[in-house]
Image 1 (cartoon, rainbow, N blue to C red):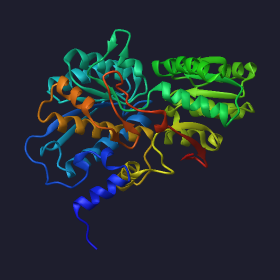
Image 2: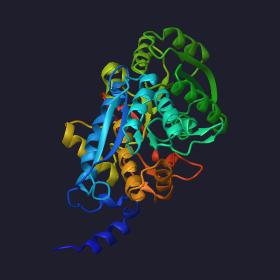
Image 3: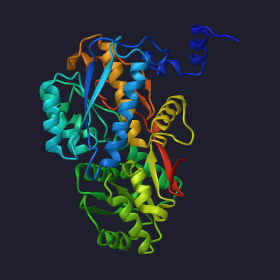
Image 4: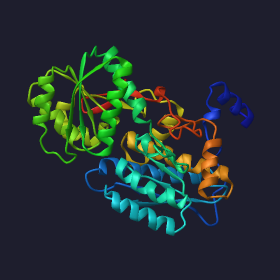
Amino acid sequence: MSFSLNSCRIALAALGVLALVPSFARVASAAPKGEPVVVGAILSMTGPYAPLGEPESRSLKIAEADINAHGGIGGRPLQITIEDDEGKADTAAQLATSLIGKHVAMIIGGSLTPTSAAIARVTNEAKVLQIFMTPTQQLWNTKAGILKYLFEATPRNELEAAKLLNYAKTTLKAKKIAVMHDDAPYGTQGALVVAAEAKNADVTIVDDEPFPINASDVTAQLGKVKASGADTVFIWTASPVAPLAVRQIRQLGMNINVVGSTGIVSDNFLRIAGKDGEGVLADMDLNVTHPNAPQRKFLTAYRAAYNTRPNNFASFAWDAAHLAALALTEAKGKYDGDSLAAALLRMKPYGGSTGTYKYTDTDHNGMRADDIHMAVDRHQVWFTL
């Protein structure tokens, strides 16, 4: 039995999928040719945050291949030039300046809130589009107004906090929640958002414990959490302290629910926490257990390339690359920041591996709470609930 392209389109439309699939991904096209369209990427591929930057780098490579397999950017090949900032904000800013000097069309990055902010100071000044991969909406939604050239590829902290608090209240029956967080912008901002959202959710926060982002011992903070009478602890960090904290919670014999932010969802956490991570909860945007069509495509491509399952951070980068390609294609050769920002704002809802994006003038995150799922560590594997 044969099917026409139109019949395929009708079938997809009936499933509600067609509007969420970018045009370059629907039908394989002729191989792109000519001068490449170059996009810069700045990631934390080495140093303490390599568990974020390494899978992001891998995803950008397979996303580049996927986009070029479907015609590239208006018939021209896409080239993603990836740089390593080692998790250092000053290095990220220097790399952004260098890439802009080489006339990249836009920049993807960074992996962390401080590096993303450092890049944004450069891109905003140069009027170059930037898509970053952390949940801190305050980077683009500033006190001075919305940064025109800065867009986000992960659900913002506010959506994440609301999801976690609702789960803790309704499923875990939590009465008293303590928050542990790193002393960097990601952790401190996350803790503030949790405190604000807790009031809306009618949940009591009984303790707030910051820890150094490079801490090797958090027993002092855990002692205060225990004394607070908390029945649930939120750990808000993307640093290697998260699995250390979980191991020390078990060593102290604390009978408490452990819930992490999306920053803990990595293979590094599973490896370091080991059996102590059993039952730890977190939120995860990439639904690995019950994937939809865009998620299955990404999961299949990543496993085929690297013989392993991707994590949240890999998903963010895959989507960032495809959002970049959508903007570049829609802009039709106009790669200045104004044209590319306008192209993203014109974009129809795009269903990626992380969730569905629909940017507006006042929302450069464009995602919903429905894009966030709960996950659990079972036998040192993350499963989506």
